[in-house]
Amino acid sequence: MGNYFEMFFQALIESSDDFIYINDCQAGTFRYSPGLVELLPLPSEVLTNPLPIWKEIVHPDDWERFYNSNMAITNNLTDEHLVEFRACKRTGEYIWLRCKGRMRRDLNNKPLFFAGAMTLMGKQNKIDNLTQLLNHNEFYSSLEKFTQSEQIKTLAVIMIDIDDFSQINEIYGRDTGDQIITLLSNIIQSTLPTNATAYRLEKDKMGILMTNCKESEVEILYNNINDKLLLGPSRPFIQINFEVSAGCCMYPKNGKYKEELYLYTDYALQKAKKDGKNRLTFFEDKMLIERREELNLLYHLRQDLNNGCQNFSLNFQPQVDPNTKQIVGIEVLMRWKNENNVPVSPSIFIPIMEKYSLINQISNWLLTTTFQTTKKWIKDNPNLTISVNISAIQLLDYNFLHNLFTIIEAEDFPAQNLIIEMTESYAFKNIEPLKLIFDEIKTNKIKIALDDFGTGYSSLSELKHTPVDIVKIDKSFVKDVLTSDFDAHFIRLVTDICHTVDITVCLEGVETDAEYNFIKDMGIDYIQGCYFAKPMDTEAMEKLLYQNI
Ligand code: C2E
Ligand code: CA
Ligand code: CA
Image 1 (cartoon, rainbow, N blue to C red):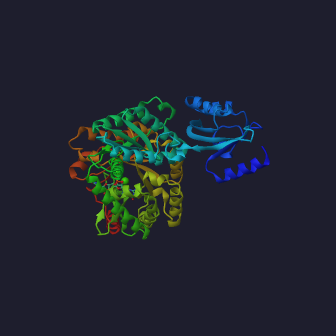
Image 2: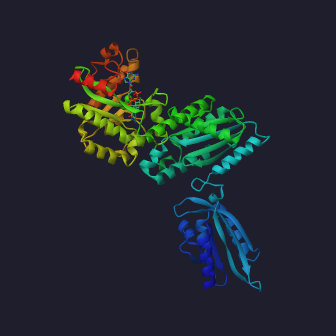
Image 3: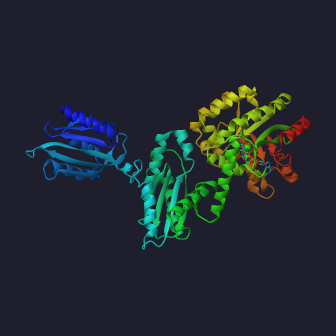
């Protein structure tokens, strides 16, 4: 290729987002921009007779089109070249490319050079490169088209999203995260009825538009997707369990315009997550009020966090030995008051802090305040344990452990008296990748408690392999213990099984004399509940503790 071509080619590459190519017809060489060689398994930037190589790269279904378009140029049937095709990337996935080119001839009509550009069609606002589903823009424009069409009487707007996807990404890495997204999109694609189309909206969120359908058809679709997630044929390739939630909004019942339909579907999806995930939730008007309240809380939480954690405080609840009624431990519970000085339940504000990534901001304050407050209590009561609640999101934050150990050292806190309570979560179920984190916690003599046991993901058989030191049986089992044989047996069984693997058992939520008398001989190691003491402030806790010693 001559010097002139070379300079021209370089200038083009440097000034374009597309992949430029040029064919020097006299030399018979093709030259591709480096970006294309990086993307596709082309052996080098300069190739002679590249067609056999392209045959390996172009999707078999698109080969004929690709070949014919090139042959039309070679055989002087046309000077224009335009073909859209799928090409296999170096990583093995297919992407859509649009190849556009033009032949230039000399004065004698002899081919001089043939040049053009290949464009990623994903970049052209149509196709998502990872999943090959239509993308977010297409979803939005279809939504507009359907809501304006005479033929469309009803439309279900659906969003599906992988539960705890950020934890999956943290634990297994982005590549596996991408594989899971692709798997889900394949499952959705293969499950859709003919009146539905799927889109990839963002990250792990997919959209589906189903025309002229009833709510029951949406339920059937969601159930079919779920069934395939459990058993589907491509399932064996990825040995990672995951579940999905979905939100749905119906046109015209819930809204007429694309903006509101989009928003309301998202609210329904968020509600599905809030209600415990792994479910399909339909939009209802009352969600708008809940949503406004949530945003208001979020605003004030953010403000207080930025103002040195003002309006946050700590409460303490004792854990007692059921036989001696002595205090053996204390659980630290976070409190927050809103702008009207009204306490908001942590079961409301903590999920919001988790959802909007605020929870990690509070960790340092929580640990520092806890250690400063309880250090003296431990000095006077050396076996006293202090339990703090740490959510999986906090634990997976890669700064968390470092901060924890730094604060322990700075405050000179005895780590062996510390217990980290974690609720059963995705992270706990898939404990293997978390082993390193748990190992580090345990090397530093800190203990781990599995909170709210019996309500979440774990099963009894998994206890054998979990690195937990303490199991806290959820308070819902005490609620009906006097009347429900199942609950009573469950508490006894969990206690016995835990003891066989040296796990300590705590029962939460003991409220009455009758409940206490019923469970006190079950062999439970310690008990926490209003029967002994409600959560209280620092002063009250200190008073009770010093009475108790
Ligand atoms: P949890 O960890 O299961 O905490 C025990 C909850 O049970 C506390 O609710 C406590 O006040 C309540 N409780 C205590 N005794 C009884 C009883 O006899 N009967 C009944 N029905 N309830 C009782 P609280 O303080 O509202 O906290 C709710 C949840 O919020 C906690 O559940 C925990 O998951 C979360 N949480 C609280 N503080 C923190 C924190 O600092 N960090 C994190 N990540 N989560 C926290
Ligand atoms: Ca707890
Ligand atoms: Ca609990």
